[in-house]
Length: 452
Image (tube, rainbow, N blue to C red; front, top):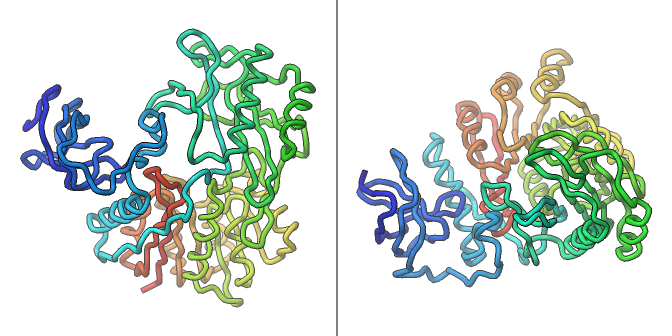
């Protein structure tokens, strides 16, 4: 090994990895250093060594990058959310573009050039969903905040620069009510205690707010007093829900919701469409960028009124409704039954009648549509979870040989992996990164594939 644990070295940062970490080499041996930026020279302490790489910690800067900026958040280093807060925003867009390009260069035969990352004009307070765990600190007192990076230790957050301001104020008031009324807090170690999480969803265009309190039980103490106090102070609250999660699990939401106030959903507007948003349904956390992303996808797909479109992993139907204006028929497929129910409602409230939403595993529904019902799409839009497409879905796409595939991805690694499986049959026309999560290491991508 060219390096040893607990020894110091001076290194030049030659690149940044996908999570924003600096990359250095000693005798061709790779070292990852959190907080370091390409072009810098730093003294590091080696903290962990593996057979082919190591991790280092910055001790001293010998030379700083010109685009390093002063840290504006007290907790970002520990929470791990905004891992790029020490980098000028425009430079973070280049880092994300280069990270996607690096994956392409390593994986695809056709070395397509990644387009520039589409950033935000004002990359602050963009999240429409706040999700804070509640727990006990080392002295047994209630604590609310975010999990420390790679742990379940909760860090209190005074001010988060990417959370919606109103959502943060509401969460703090709910937490204050819990403390003042000595409502018990869930303890992960023994499974006792009531309050687990506070979730606040906000419609950015409508200002409607939903509060979800995740509880380890079936009753919320002092329910009427809680509702009265919370809704009187925050007039935009339209719905308060108790979500029941009694399992010893890292999964935040349980399967049962009890409406304490309102009708159990809020509305928001995306493009020219109104969407109902429930506690369980997925809705893009950055609707400003989501709208721009969908428009890129639709423009690239070049859909016309003779086209049948499949929208796989359709959620509550956001992309399906955007596409419906241009297509003959849109089939939306989603495994979460409640999301499919919401998608049908969303089509109805927007007077859209050329969509059909189906609940079930994407691979099974896709197989049924194509091989049994003989419905051949002209365009397929896929927006899978982070794990990407399964092999059966890819095989079905290859059997169908649809003219165009639009692949929307929240994980460039699985996107490029899947494109490699398709590129013998499809040409990748473009890959456009969209900065849905400014200052974090995450980036969304839109890829257009055309049948060769």
